Amino acid sequence: IEGLKAAGLTILVYLVALPFVFLAGAGFVIFFLATAWLLGREYFELAAMRFRPPAEAKAMRRENAVTVFTAGLIIAAFVTIPIVNLATPLFGMAFMVHLHKRLSGPRPELIEPSSERRLRSL
Image 1 (tube, one colour):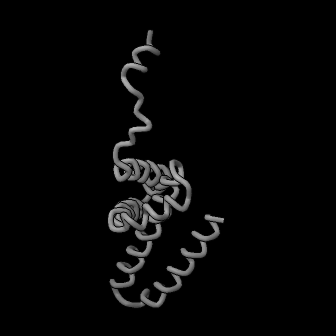
Image 2 (cartoon, rainbow, N blue to C red):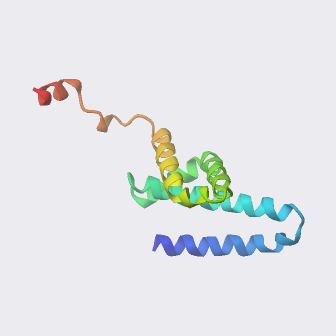
């Protein structure tokens, strides 16, 4: 279901951007920004859904929209490099997992107390 929603949104965004293709230079910028927004949105949600339910992942994306869009710009720039762009899925997911973890902050529930760790090592 999420994949179909993403595909529909992608088609809609590119159809809206299509009339701007004929504007010299502006068409490239508009398509680049649209691609950055879509890539940032989708890769972040995929990364966040590894750790959270879909509703929480979407809410987190909305709360950090500017940061996610900026990260999408980096991924979109990566896509523009021939041959290297074949690694986009790996780069995009790794980048967004790191971004998600940074935005999530410290998660005390994942840090086990040092006394328990010492007992386990014995």
